[in-house]
Length: 55
Image (cartoon, one colour):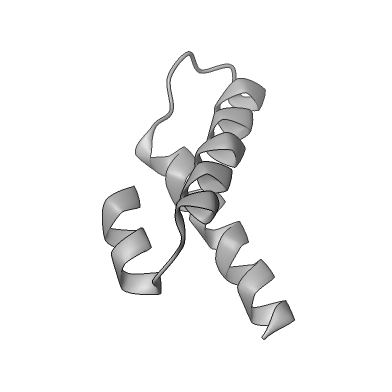
């Protein structure tokens, strides 16, 4: 899912790492030990919101 989003949105390696970091935080808050697809989807959604505000 992350690879597809990076390719579709043309994200940089830095953006990829930020999405992973946010996903890890979301998983931690949810009490999950690993990053699940729903955590990635939420982090990517936040990235889209951020991108829409700055462009």
